[in-house]
Picture 1 (cartoon, rainbow, N blue to C red):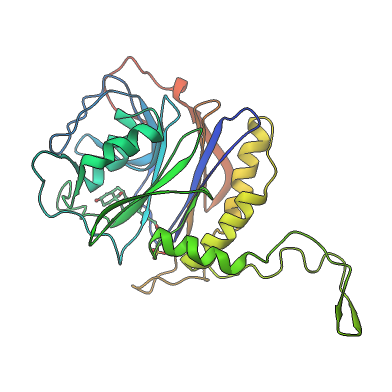
Picture 2 (tube, rainbow, N blue to C red; picture 1 turned 90 degrees about the vertical axis):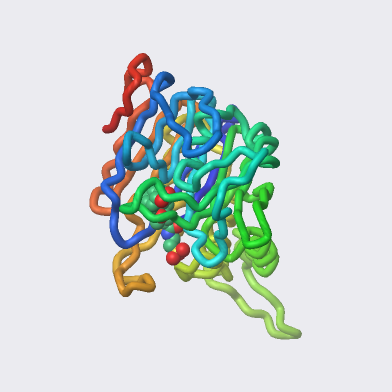
Length: 314
Ligand SMILES: C[C@H](CCC(=O)NCCS(=O)(=O)O)[C@H]1CC[C@H]2[C@@H]3[C@H](O)C[C@@H]4C[C@H](O)CC[C@]4(C)[C@H]3C[C@H](O)[C@]12C
């Protein structure tokens, strides 16, 4: 399970973040790739050298980002999409070939807006190529966001799809259009409190506030989380200032975060929200809260040495 959301503050700056729900961590931390870091694309992709900060691990001098953002405020997160993700088995001539493991890096090293990524994706092949034997290909879909909007990228058996994401939310399977379709089943849910209702001649008094947002699904499954995260994200009033917006992000994602004991993965282990991360487009700062510690760690792009050519971690 994983959930990602985005929203804007009162000055149209973006906040973007995600829950990473899994049974074991990979030792992920803040990873910064400076302008002059020499990114070696797996195939024929370019590197336009945008500095990138995110959460991930470094393998063979390559940052494998779980989620990240660049100096232009463009952000991306990879979420599990196990049953549907089908990447190309081989690179395809006359297209830009991007290995699945480098997709977040390719997006953020090369583009400054969702519009530009969407245009480039018209001629992109995502290839099922692992970085090495230790890290097999992860079956993911991605949410890409900037200060204006977000899109979802899914590689299904019938090819690559790019969807506008009007609720700025992504969880896991099924495919995004089915998640959006299902939202219609919750169109009646509202924050209002009704004082009383009439059933024919019978007047029923409701408990004060008891029916606020009644009807939201409560489980941790991908479909229930999508509804809950989209509802909370779309109803939270616009906030002013970094503190209130970071707080908004953590509060909204806490509504879909998984605690130990409530979700068991296919291999019989507990899945829980290992971390929640938040990127502020206003200050280019990344925030991170891990399961075992409520303290929020943070670092800004300016905390790293952008004149170096090596990957840096914190
Ligand atoms: C497991 C993570 C996604 C969490 C998630 O969506 N959980 C939902 C579970 S479920 O559907 O509800 O069952 C994904 C997100 C990013 C992934 C990692 C990144 O893609 C970076 C590398 C890529 C390598 O190919 C594999 C290891 C890896 C280090 C990946 C491991 C794992 O697949 C990660 C950590």
